Image 1: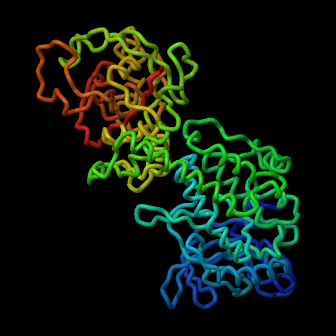
Image 2: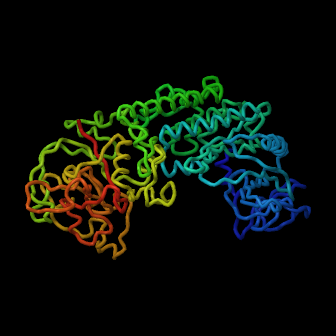
Length: 607
């Protein structure tokens, strides 16, 4: 039985009317009841439930619940005398009925309490009080890797390998100390903020085991491990050792780089069968993953072998592959820096960090997407999330619009690809994590707010947009490219047609929104669609382009804003109250250092 399965059993949750599972340690019976004493012998019943303010073991005051799972419940608490905040895991009372588990718990908790490492959650204390067995640990602020992956899907390679090296450092030290973990998973990897960086912490060593006594079974009929991460020998209940942890590290490496588990199947049963049969997915061929050395990918996949003898034989061995990949990526960034002559003078109070500038071009160095993604004769070669705009003329501007849109003239463009939607918070978060770039002004922390992953990113300057595009192996579209992608070759006034439709776009006077328009997930207004399939061209957020705000051609109109002072901004937004801002030919402009409600989308040459 796995942790994931145990979390769904009735024994780990409250029942109707507040009844919970309690156990009698005297008669070794379990009951779902609200009573405090055993109905058989009157002995006090033990439970993992604790109330706010309750005192545990005479020295820990319970404050609130942090989380719960198959092993028990974790609480935030305070040491009464020292005033120190701690986390306390109350072991599920059903486990205390197993003498095998109790013997293991006491021996391993004692050993874990003496094990110290910078990347391991510290265990301060352990014991038993009123039939409750507990572990006292340092309390952490931050998030676990599972939550991070749910927000960002994957981790860019450089940061992934940095984290994996830290995880391996912790596991290698544990193995040298005679401890195997046996429940490594993304949920047990915690990322703790430390200034502008994060420290990796490996959790749940308090329930790890000594190597010489290691067993996949922690109690009668209960197996430690989690579906998708537990090695085949754990699933079968056979011998486990350090290579069992190596397997889980391989799973996490694949998951961090791709955003998914390395096994086919949608259900836990399918995944378990795939693990037992050695059915492992290959690494997908994506621009970002081309930055990972092929030999490192082979080592990761070998760690997922059913036969432990075919895996890396130690954590140090797989860690060496991660370190090689990290060195390879950093050297590529160095080549990019030399090629573009980046140096210390690029780093200033208002400039991206040198690390960010180095990392920004890495994908382009190792995978020149703009040169390989497709050709003018092969529109099917469009990169993921982009559409093809063929070469040829289109009519730019409008002789019926404001003076800066005149004169309307035919413009001939080469073929290009352009993003279907504006760049999202989720897209931008990967860039921030990869490059150490400052987050947008609209984010309250180093990441976007929960639920905002698919909103278009805003609060970015023109340079922020350029840096993201360069990191992604793309560029900003010129304003001519943007306009052609929005209106096609028939000079239409709006992305959908020449006919005005007030409900088609996300703008401030959309009658269906009753004056409550707000920024929306990209693509939420599917009828705001251009001839080439671009969405959100008329509304949602305005968008940066690569172009300076200059006159189109011979004109009597003069503006002090013309020149290389302002960048062209295209499209309307949820704040627009006048439909004129939603026209395909409308031009706005902003200072390049302005970070307001403007977003952006990217383009790539189709050559």
